[in-house]
Picture 1 (cartoon, rainbow, N blue to C red):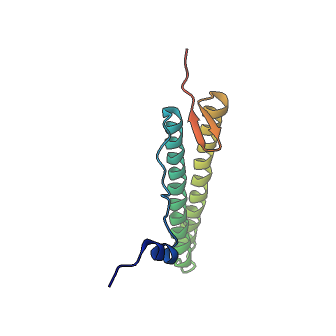
Picture 2 (picture 1 turned 30 degrees about the horizontal axis):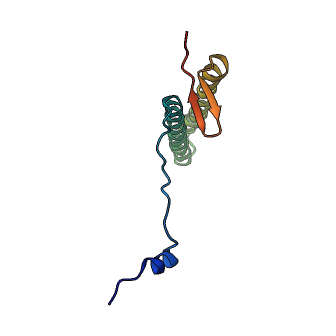
Picture 3 (picture 1 turned 180 degrees about the vertical axis):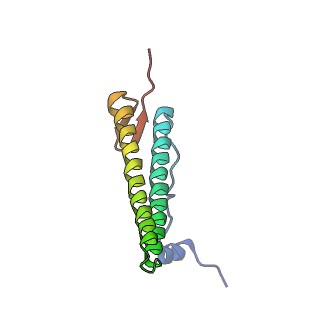
Amino acid sequence: MNPPSNDAVNRIFGGTVQPVITSLPADPREALGRVIGIGINLFILVVIFFLLIYMLWGAFDWITSSGEKEKIAKAQNKIVNALLGMFIAFGVLSLFGIITGNILGLFIQTPTGWIFNIPTL
């Protein structure tokens, strides 16, 4: 019994697949900007994850409070603190973007990502 040919396998499984992850650009400034952009995206994901966990914890405490006013107040405080934390985190990211991008000109945003503009004398 002969193994199937590559043509038969390509017809069944759709041929070759290109890798999703590409290497960083050769320009170090663009690579640094892209790494910082990935770091900011990861920061946003972590903040959203912890926000949801803390809000769900507050909601669970509210549901299991059995109508006790003290437990309800603690649960409401957890939810309010989670929302305040979200606004603070996104405010800090906005200020970072305004200060480093618009005021200092350290980052230039392009369609492919950020380019780190190294200051020179």
